[in-house]
Image (cartoon, rainbow over all chains, first blue to last red; front, side):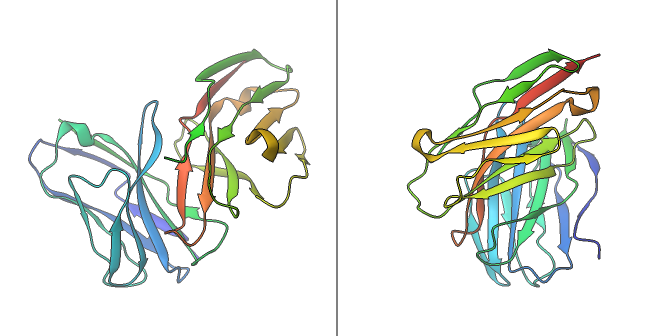
Length: 112
Length: 115
């Protein structure tokens, strides 16, 4: 039982490049979400999904796209990376209405 | 916005001292949960505790204790007899189910325990 798996763990991008951060969970959770962590800002919600085919924006969605084609996977896409997107990204999953969530190990992204 | 405030940005204590990390939250919800997470230098988020809004009983787990007071919207965390391994960033978060199961995190308190 792997829980929430994020790949890659580290990534360096050049400004303007695109990439996808992967997030997979094997707990059959309906809810999945992406957060970014910046110094002095805590974790902030980027996008979330309440089930396959359903996504919605969080607090800081600009510059990111998501889709949810399966229950297990919730990739986060950066179409044209910017230095302001340098951050640590966390994926989380949970059951609908559950009082807990499981976090992945994080992806440290640097955009130069 | 329904904020979570951790006013202490950085705290340093000498080993074996007690330390309290403060957390104040805002909410309009009647049902919510409060969490504390530890983030060690390795970067992962380590779950410490969860309390629901209907249970104000304080909790103790080893050297850790939590004081939840709805009257002051606070959920403070105390480490007794601190150890070097307690050095980490600690996050308080509020969580409301059934609204996307969203967490609202505080900005974190960086704790350094000096040997």
